Amino acid sequence: MLILAGLGGVLHGTPAAAQDDAVQEDSVIALPTGSVRIVEVSGLLDAVLTDFLISEVIRAEEEDAFALVLQVDSLGSVVDDDRYRELADRLAQSSVTTALWVGPSGAAALGGTAELAGVVDLVGVSGGSRIGETGPARLPEQFGPAFGDATERLRDQTIGSQEAIDLGISSGPIVEVSTIPTFLLELPGYRLTTSADGQQTPNVSQEFLKLPITSQLFHTVGSPEITYLFFAGGLALLLFELFTAGVGIAGLIGVAMVTAGTYGLANLPFRPFGVALIVLAFLAMAVDIQTNLPRAYTVVGLVLFVAGTFFIWDGVTMSWVTGFVGIVGVCLYAYLGMPTMVRTRFSSPIIGRRWMVGSDGSAIGELSATTPGEVAIGDARWAALAREGIIPRNTPVTVVATNGVKLVVEPASA
Image 1 (cartoon, helix red, strand yellow):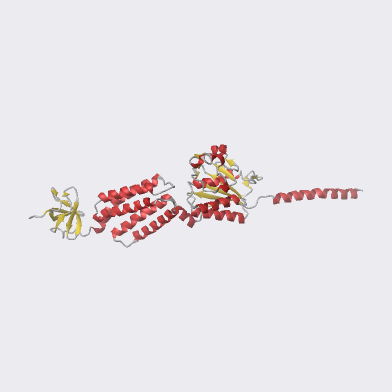
Image 2 (spheres, rainbow, N blue to C red; image 1 turned 60 degrees about the vertical axis):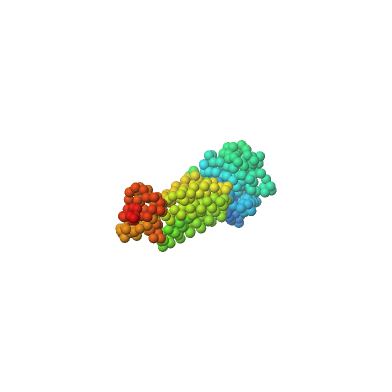
């Protein structure tokens, strides 16, 4: 009897044990697979960044990632509409969970970047960040209004995190979270587990992804600020090389900078006449550089450059600090840098030599002892001062001394 009872207990207990094993096995199978891929989206959404995002969506699907999260701090999109729609379609139709977080605090999602919030599964906005100013819709009607009833309002306005929640700008959940680890807790199936020693660890691993170095270089060059500085700086170096008659180092660097600036212009919306104004500005300054006396053409060049700085971009903005640096830099270039360089480079015929003393010529413009002008001696023009008084234009003169890089002249004796 005892044996039979024991056997009965064993047989009765076997299904329960099997059930426990099945539950344990199911719980193991239910554990999340893959990782959360957090992709940084900073700067303008250009062709380089768009291609990178599309490739990451594809890779996340192929490798069965747990989720794809876009960490956004972007002032808009400059990619063409077809490529932009392809990215939006990839995010909307992705087999993995997609999310967009605008952060950290102070970040922004504007223009086309903000419109992507309407195609992902989860949206988060950190406190102090803003979203909106989408402008005209880039996505076709099949995607529906990007922000529901608030779409029209957000075409030319931005809102913060709490207002985004109140307006329900996304068809999916919207949350206000200040950090990316907190935002990840809003993903379905993502949770923290507590170990025996009390430490909390996520049940899913994370990967933080950025553009590769080469792509990041092109992405950076494609920003309005860098494009502007490279294009203007390259033109300045080419002009510098033209008047130094050097070995070409400045010219090569100038060519590289203009090429990089041209690449940026090809990827950004710009006004052709704004670019033309900047080019004409340096051509105008070159006229006075030949005479080594900054005068009317230099003023005209600076006015053209300032106008070009304000009108070069169409649809994107540039930091006022960048514009200020560019304008001040060109002023110093025209009034200090180039005149000093030209005097230093070509002053050897007069500094330390007195062979020109006694040479005859004529005053091209009016001269005085304090205001320099120019005199023509042979086929060359030279900066000169009057020894005393005022010498009228076209007056025959004789070189009587040198003063640094300038000649000192007096009216020729009859």
